[in-house]
Length: 175
Image 1 (tube, rainbow, N blue to C red):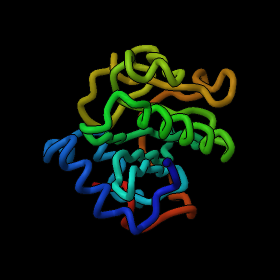
Image 2 (image 1 turned 30 degrees about the vertical axis):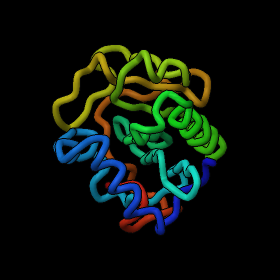
Image 3 (image 1 turned 60 degrees about the vertical axis):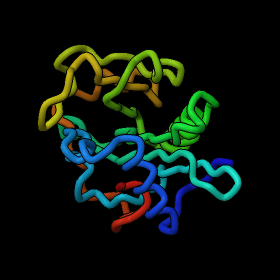
């Protein structure tokens, strides 16, 4: 069962991310973009199985080149015992639907095309979107939620300003 994450999920999400990604996750550039944005957002989702949290997804509102209306997907974590069953893709679908309904225009991520292309993500033109730290530019992917949106988003990824009031505070998806 998938659902919106709550503050009560904080510990289970942190534990899941620690198992899946290890301590190296804190050094990643994408993690640094999310710092200080408030971990709980309207786009944070989890999947449960028999009362056990088996997957989590975070999506953070960002600006690209100073332009609002964008979000960054990740991290997405799936318990190794439950991989390959579609839980991650279901969370992605729900988060993208929520982002579109909220009026966002584009969602980006840093990830592997073979996994994310099934959800509509495509590589961005090299150099069009940059991060405030090292990122392999070939792994920057985007999905348009509004037709033609990608042409309007160029430049440096930063946290959205001001942060969305829809969540705020330390919480669900910041393991």
